[in-house]
Image 1 (tube, helix red, strand yellow):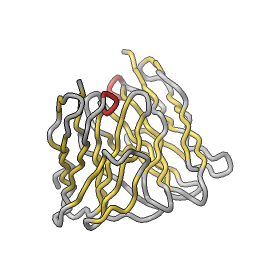
Image 2 (spheres, rainbow over the protein chains, first blue to last red):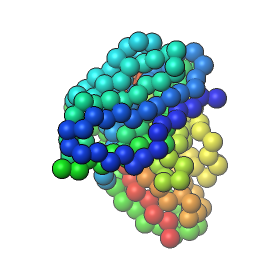
Image 3 (cartoon, rainbow over the protein chains, first blue to last red):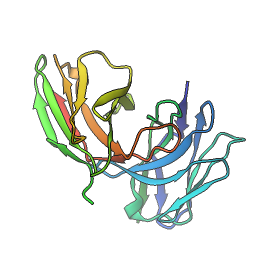
Image 4 (tube, one colour):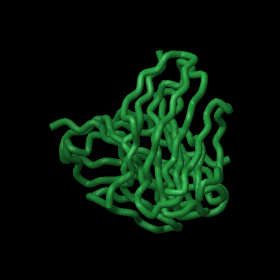
Length: 112
Length: 115
């Protein structure tokens, strides 16, 4: 079945460091891919998305490219800020049901 | 546009009781999905409603049920609560449910604690 695997956290970085959070997926067909972010005590916010191979989603300095050949959708940011501290979830949209299948989440902590 | 709202935000119940959670989707959104979030299992899909009909269901026991009203508001119910039902329950709405692109917008969640 469909699944998403993320790198385990927590990831601890200093402010202005480069961020990569790895995400790989297993799916039939061509699912849409998403990154969601969850700040403490809040629900999930859509960070970015990509709907087909080689698409690049971007938002607030974050980027991720839909790589079908490696079944990956890694999240990157060139310079993180303390305010980026949160839990990041990679997800795919099941083409048959439309439901979201999430990875386990990666906690990011950015220190000043 | 107002976002997805969920009530109540926090709930404490005891084992054996039942609970009802409410979700109001973004205006115009007809699909409502529910997810359970726990530290151990992560985010798991419960069910999805579209035009008052359950379209999809996850792998949860029958104690978990839901419904959707004509105004797209949705409720989920958990009967005979167990300690393991303690979780953050998230509701998400989208314009429609279909394969492929399915941008879902999440509410803040209801934190359920079962004692």
